[in-house]
Length: 380
Image (cartoon, rainbow, N blue to C red; front, side, top):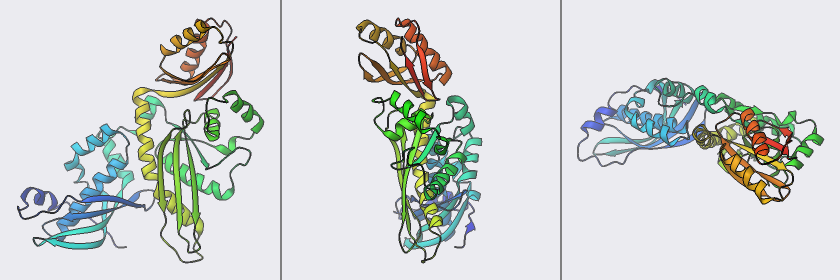
């Protein structure tokens, strides 16, 4: 496919001077595929200009706005992008205009459907330098970069990850690390016995088996995936992201590769399909991360002990409420468990839990195990 770099010429002039006879709707942009680590391909339909060059410029501007919004899940940042729409539309050195798919004429003005490749890597840098998006490094400093576990759908430590699945894990991890997310390696979980004991400690707190593993190893979010390929070498992939502490589905995305002749490398087709699925998933997960930056991170806690006295339960809940937003998932005479949302660090939250137990009348609470996202105590 041949591309040219666009120049911002007549699209803004046309927007201001268009005659009353022009009735075409606003252009519509749609994600097509990830081209490589830098570029994403966007299809823009209904881009109109006073001439063909103006129509292509209008399409490039719409593709830039669309791609910019896909880089964040924050509603505030999306609004900031809209507010700076005119400025962003001028960054046409970040857009390459490709094949025109359809051309119509409205009052002798061309209206086109066209493919635009946007350099999303440089686009993010530009948006951050213009303070339209918060720098990923600044957001990470404020709340900590989320820890991500990536595993196949149906994963268990006992089964492990097959080599073909590891290839997909690595592809997803590569995408996320470019976005400043930190990864937890499932292959590092060598001691299955210790992991099983840790999972037993939070039995009943989390109902999802992969969520249990993710919390034990300190992941905030876990990704699962499925992928397959046909005999004609066309791959499809599905990627989902979940909140580790609750198992809540945060994002889901599907992707497809182009169709290739028999004999084409299947792993390459699968990589293409996975890359197709990731931008939408990242956009939604980014929104979750921005929410954490405002409200605080969620930590899982599980406390076993004698909670037969109603007073101890009330005192412990009161002490925890003073530290953050608490949601209980288990409250019995033998276990007190749930999540606490706090802007404090993991070490500080651990201290808060210990102090809360002491305030509730447990003189010698014992920390059984802890991770970056989970704390297990025995109340004595």
